[in-house]
Each structure stands twice: as structure tokens, then as C-alpha cells.
Amino acid sequence: MNTPENQMLLAGKITGAYGIKGWVKVQVFTDPPDNFFAFRHHQVLRRGQLETIELVDGRSQGKGWVARVVGVDNRTDAELLRGTEIWVPQSELPVLASDEYYWHQLQGLQVWCEHGEQRLLLGEVDHLLETGANDVLVLRSSEGSIDERERLIPYLPDSVVLAVDTEAGTMTVNWHPED
Image (cartoon, rainbow, N blue to C red; front, side, top):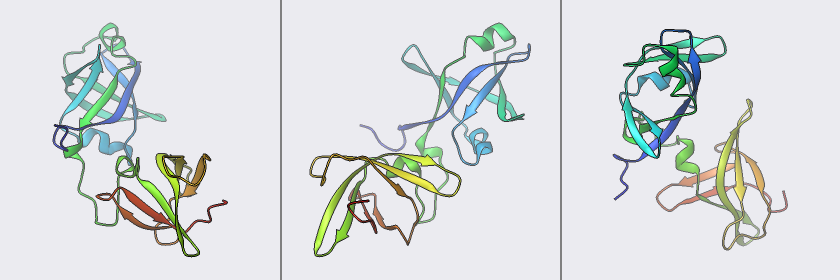
């Protein structure tokens, strides 16, 4: 059974070695980035298996992040981790306010709009893009959607995104179906 306690989320990726003492460069996927180091249970995916690792001494370095992995004491061992994904348990995510959502909670939701007297299915949230000004929902067509178009819809609560119901798997937007 796949429950929130055992669901894992991709939080980062080791992109290479840093220095000669076993430190690794980490591409961090959390926002804000320093939240990545607050997780207690990091795991790397190697050879199709998740393996627990302990990250210590993580910090920003230039435009990226670096960390020391317990038991990795030289550059050669750090290089062996290059390309591995770092996963964390979903259960360790901070609790959000009732009107806030993690991106993974929005992915897969059916997106509906009201058009005249009709309620139209625009598609399903495939992923989100961070643009700086606001996040953007990327919709792909799904069974029952009005057409096969990919749509980009700004994630603007209250003005564009009117309602999110993660339990029902739906989102209602103020969006013209031709846009």
C-alpha cells in the first residue's frame, strides 16, 4: 500500500564531487533551497534501490549547494554518487496552510472551467513551471477533455485558480477554453 508515510519525493540530485574531502555538489529541488537540509531521512536511488545516506555540513556554494555524506571521505567515493537522485519521505514535509499546496499535490488534478452554462474539462496538470513572476500550470489533454491541446495557465489563486480539491482530484479555473 502506498501511504503518505512511505511515499518518497524527489528532493535533489548529486551532480558531482566538490573538492578532495568527499563533499558532493547537490542540485536542490526544494523551495526555499535550504529546506533540503532540514529533512532527516535522505535516500539515494542507486541500481534501482533506495539507500539511506546521512548528509551533514550542507551549505550554499556559489550558485549551488554542497554537502558532506557520512562515510564518503574522498573525491573518488564522491564521484561514485554523481547522477544519483536524492529522495525524502513525503511525511517529513512541513504542514501547509489549508489554502497552500505542494506541486506534487497539484500534479494529476483535472482542471475545469466554467464557460456559459457549461463546465468544461481543459485537461490534467502534468507539471508546473517556475517563471519568477508566478508559477505556471502545464496541462495536457486527458480523457474527456475538450481537445488535445497543451495549455499553460498561470497559478494565481483567487484570480485564475478559483478552487482546488485534492480529495476529489479537481481544480476549477477562471480561464477561457480557447486560451
